[in-house]
Length: 167
Image (cartoon, rainbow, N blue to C red):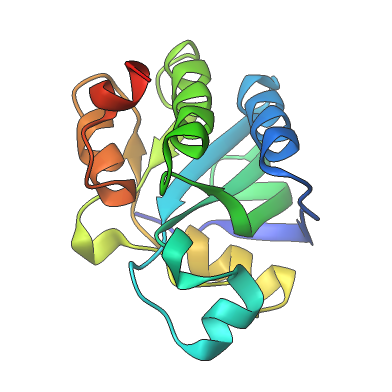
C-alpha cells in the first residue's frame, strides 16, 4: 500500500458527542471525501488521558477524513480524535452505530476501517494535525463492508453491537 500524501491537515475541534456524530456523518456522506475510522488503545498514559479524556471512555473512535485530489494524494485532511466518540456506554455506542449505519449506505471504499489488534490507532490528540494525520494514514485499512463491521465494532466495545440496539 502506498503512503497517502497530505497537502493540508486540520484538527476538528469537537463539541459534544451529538455534534461529533452529526459532523462525522456529514463527512461520511460528503462527495469526494474518504473517511478512515480507527479504534484507540484500550489503555493510555496520563498524557493520553490529559489530551483525550478519562480512560473509562477508552477505546475511542478516531477518524481521518480526506478530500482526495489524486489516488494517494489528499488535498485536505481533517483529523478527528481525542474525545470524539466512544462506545463505553449505551447512549454513546448508539452514536457510533449511527456513523457506521451512514457509512454502510455509502459506495464501497468510501469508508475504510482499521481492525485487528495490530491496527489500533495511537492516541494522536497530543500531536499536531500533520503528525496525527500521518500517523493515522500509515495504519492499513480496508473498505467497511457488512462482514467486517462486527470486527471493527469489537475493537470499540466488548458488548456486541446488537445489544446496544435493544436499549
